[in-house]
Image (cartoon, rainbow, N blue to C red; front, side, top):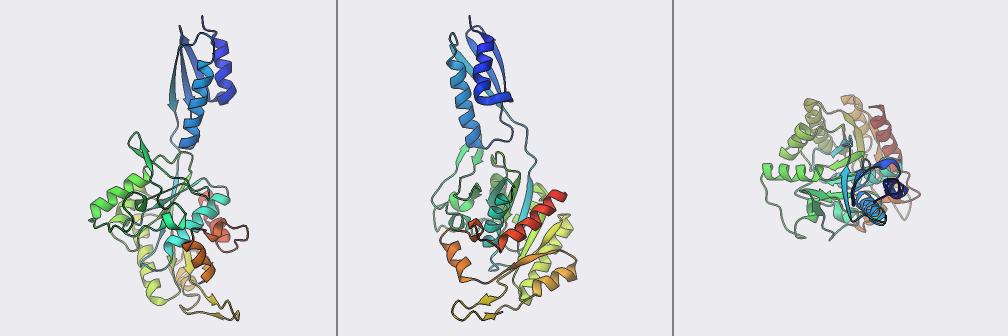
Length: 317
């Protein structure tokens, strides 16, 4: 006859208070609470629990049921009114900086037509797996799991999709098995089209970060993006001014090819917070192309302050 207390002690030794045990003859049934665990942690713990129960004398069969409470995640949309303003670079670095600041972050490359996060996060060529009809995010060297349409199609292949197809693909990425992540950073495509509308209507982000360069044309489009989120009832966390000033690596002289302060002035005019500036830097460009986001470095002084403002905003909600 199986010693029930011994089974309980064996599984508790590997899973603590996450389990309850029931023994019926030679069969041990274990209910494992996996709330807050990432998919790989959950799978590993289930294997250890199963092995611990099976090692008890007399146990011929082990059944493990895994349960988990749904994590309440906050979605942060990183958006821009137009392309070419560095939105994806900002999104990748903010995701890493938020993770270093204590958030459990996942990154969704929702720029369906121009996915670039696999390169930025050094995850090119890694295809996600699926379990129970849910995608499993892929790991990155920076502690931020991610999913991108760029991981699901052949490299270099154009996605000639109409709006509903693109919106459906976004839903699969957002509704993936994100495990313990409490924050999802969404790198949205530029503009105010079908993907953005589906995202704000179906997934309702906690807030949006708008990326713009200082030039007037970019600011006009940034104002349109802000209007979309305001109309949808999604709070705008603030504006980030990218490509704000260029320091010559040879002489050190600082110039402003795109102007300076335009995004801060526009933020004041629209009544939204100004989150900070990111300079036009060859170092940031080279690091991004190499899949080494600057926010992962110990000396990051550009993205960390912006991420802290976003973290504080999320905490206040």
